[in-house]
Amino acid sequence: MRDGGAKPSRNDQNHTPARVRRDAAANRRRILTAARRLFGPGGDAVQVRDVARSAGVSAATLYRHFPARRELMDAVIAEQSRSCDASVRRAVSDPDPARALRAYVEHAFEAQADGAMFAGAIRAANATLPGHADRVARFRRDLALLVGRARAAGVIRPDVTAADVLLVIAAGGGASLGLGAGTDAGFGTPGHRAARSRRLADIVLTGMGLRFYA
Image (cartoon, rainbow, N blue to C red; front, top):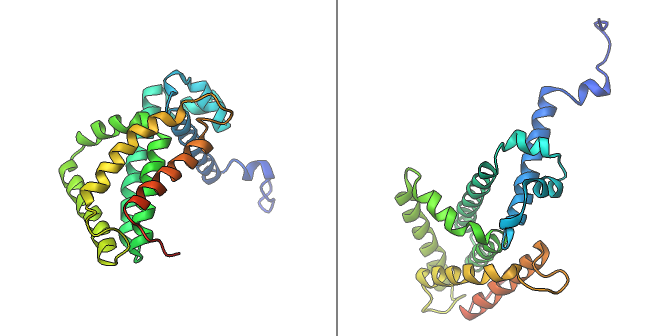
């Protein structure tokens, strides 16, 4: 029995319930980040052990969080959906209309490049959730607000509409499927996909006439 005044050992401190919960949460984040990268374009052949290796955790740790591959994929889909919703909310709260619209479009293309194979699954999963119609209506209102503010500020072409933005984002989803293809060194890696998605967003925004002020 430990004396009443004795201090906990370093090993005891590393295994407190709070520390265990923090470590588990960190492991889950690493697993989801790795899965989102690896399950991108061409990710059908990726094995769960590949995800664990990329995340820096053991297969046993991964299976404690996600007992089946389908559960892992569902978690990635849910995270992607939450990320997209949060992106729109952040953009709406940004007082700079040019920066807000740019940030939203860049995030949309980046998310597509990271998880192009999930686009259809995300739409299908969201459509089954309660309140889906209300979320879609809120998203469309928020996007119309972003585009309207940019038009009013004169930072995009006066004929650009929210429907135009949805159109180019949808087209970008098809382009994202090609970001994982190629034979050059580094082609299709997460860094390459991120760089190309930013380039695609820049071309699209330039076509809209966006004038970005830092």
